[in-house]
Image (cartoon, rainbow, N blue to C red; front, side, top):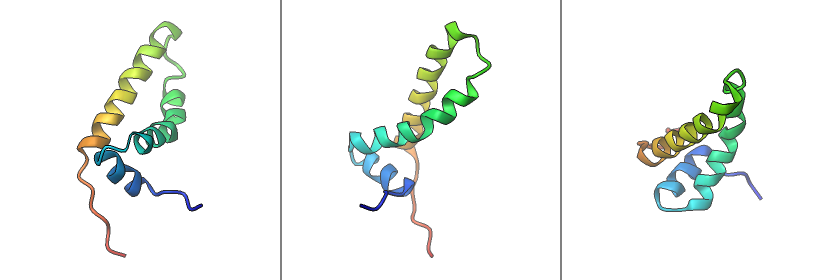
Length: 69
């Protein structure tokens, strides 16, 4: 089975596909965690949650257009 592109996942997310949205979150969660490495442990979980919420909001509001190939 072919892996879905980010474009396809964003489009599906905007159409209400929660699974597609969670795939995007899981794809970017390691990067979010890496960027929070130097943050105090007591603040890390709250910041991670805030960044995931920001990511979700950005995905749902993004203007997506297929680039002509």
